[in-house]
Amino acid sequence: MKGWTDAHCHLQGEFFDAPAHAHDEVVATLERAYDAGVDRVVVIGTGADSSAEALEITHLTSPVEIFATVGLHPHDAKDDLGPIAQLARSGHPRLVGIGECGLDYFYEHSPRETQRRTFSAQIALAHELDLTLVVHARDAFDDLFAIFASDGVPARTVIHCFTGTPDEAEGCLALGCDISLSGIVTFKNAELLREATRLVPLDRLHVETDSPFLAPAPYRGQKNEPAYVSLVGEFVAALRDEDPSALREATSSNSARLFRLPAD
Image (cartoon, rainbow, N blue to C red):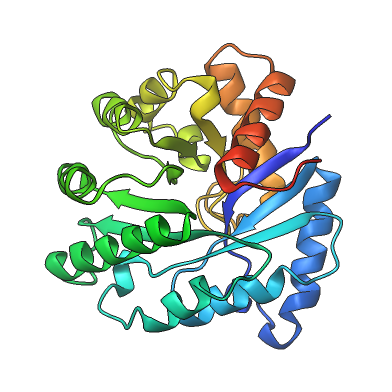
């Protein structure tokens, strides 16, 4: 029987109170996740340092299997992509994806044109290396779809922490993208997202925490961690009128396919 897979989390030292002891805290965090029924996590890179650290974390001794991605977040799209490309081409045995990358027109910490250019470069990396593309998209689906139309959608692509409308969900699915849901789906003001969630075929669905952000109800506003992915999954199962065990098995199998994780 498969445990839960947290398809997207951030466990780098910057997110812990004592960075010098961060690895001890990561192991303790993953032990709590294991006790909550989680057996795999994917640690996501968002820049050169966090991507390098994500790969380093995969070597920790933990009851939970750890995999990693490398990428440049749209907030930092103006930064040099060179170090990310170097890590992507390193052949690291636990490297399973490029990202998170994409477009964020809500905050616009980097200019839109810079975001588009950097996103396209990472799509090209995913194509070149046959790695999964992990996409961040906020208030930018029109441009996201336009870029995918011109650059092509990598064979294994996921829209992480999906927060769009039902129409935007259908647009992503039509392009061949998978959809990953975070604790936002449990928030009281997320009715449109819940409507979209009901539309996603079970074989295209993933669950994640995006920890330490976006803790699900009843922990909203507190620090999130991979142990809480079960709360996301159980909420989604109830929303879709599905058996939680079946949804756990399906989403974990989906994430294994998406990221080409080793067979159990």
